[in-house]
Image 1 (cartoon, protein in one colour):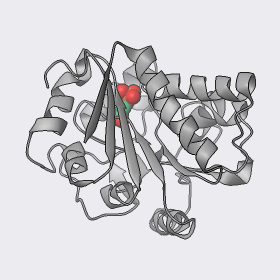
Image 2 (cartoon, rainbow, N blue to C red):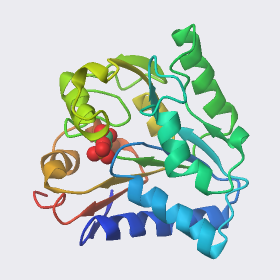
Image 3 (tube, helix red, strand yellow):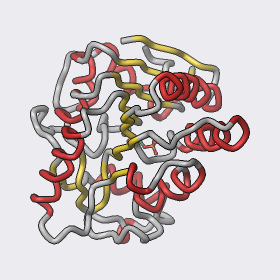
Length: 243
Ligand code: PGA
């Protein structure tokens, strides 16, 4: 695991974006896995700026998002589809056909999970998977006790994740947060050729310490990243403070 420790959130985002842009300029047909959440917002802002100010070309990029809530329409203000359009896709020149999220409103959710996994596989697989991390160690929506061998599947969100997302995105209203989601599985994530995990702030320090130092356990799903040969952690000083 390569670890970059940055001064703060902004430098964390800049460091990740430097790697991403370098990779996109080396391979315009890059397949990129993307997260939602507060942590990647800075990365998306800088990617948008790189397009606007420096003409970085995203027209051949393909992206796959990690997850989507079950039951939220793609235009729902809190859907991840909408989040991605507002934060990134509307601000760069990626064609609509090139970005993908699971459809949380599919009639048959099991079939949708299979379709999504197949789509990723048939694209040739993800070159770089960008990840955030939940305070409980989830990556994507793979919550504690997840099974490491699964591909894309439907999950029930934990109380902790629902409370955290309520506070960040639903004005604190737990009742409005969907209780289920579709997520790429740990297997889908580990299949990526390279993984970049970003984290910032003291509230992530404990889980980052576990990710780096503790034995692999499904109780802290992110610890499985120790088994991947090409992981870069880009974390700020506060998130790194317990390593
Ligand atoms: P955050 O969420 O970036 O909003 O902290 C990360 C996650 O829950 O995966």
